[in-house]
Image 1 (cartoon, rainbow, N blue to C red):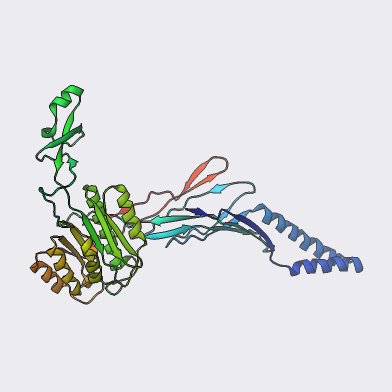
Image 2: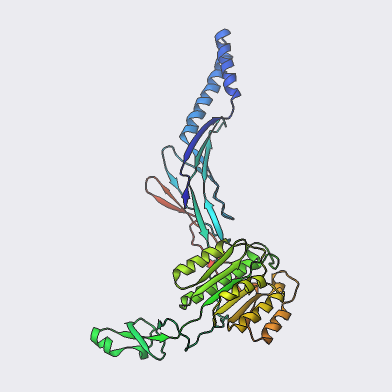
Length: 396
């Protein structure tokens, strides 16, 4: 999104009393001529004219960027020749999700004596969206309600099941047992069979955004880990061909019914990027929304709450044949003091699929450096401190 493409230029004399003093020297030279007045007049007048020409030539520039990206600092001073162009790129990594504005930008210059200052304002802005990262979750398995007898749309899959629904071209890694030899002989190329897969249950991802149970601040807060988990789980489900929905009642209510495809992935990421803490407790969210969940649906609940009130809502979900998976962010590992053992023990006793989440599940990438590339108007390019960004991710 772009806005405000206006530009303005301002040339200002910083030392206005200087003009009064020069006028006084001119008056003195006319009324009572003396070489002292002439020397002062020539010196100050020449410096003023030289400063004006210098300021108009934009010999050096100070760039002030008004962008609101966290930890993004592009303010810089550069030397530049008159009637020339100088460009550079500034790299930065934003760890904080959300909407941000790039720009506006100001250019400031002046003369060595400080008589004049020039300000160029470039009002163009661009809105940018930073979505939460998606991380691998190999140790988390979601309880599903997939059933062969359940009616639904058949999904073509390369895995062997009962019946075949079609063929496709062979790609590296396909099993040789799935090759359809008649079709391969007819088209003189390898083709593999696509088998019908039993219908998949929908996934509903619940993210607890209640401000009263969150711990920590900034990137280390429990809601940030919860949002990363939600984005990663939703991505896994969508890649598996499932319909995934999202529920998060925070600063604003997010209600995305289950859908499939990359469009749903974008909607989920965009919604998670903008949500913040709210005042709706988890038990209230579950009680309000459970009537919209169909039988054999999978409900994935992500919360740092060790308050056992919301556990009662799980019983209602289980009575409606809804498969539940709980991802509990252990408060002890997020600067909390209340133990999660009573909640974990009850989840185990009820046979509910659950996992205890600690900060070790995710670590921010380490950016070792960035690069700057400058290009002149003559078409020559030169790197300055050019090195590639090195992202080092911790493994689970």
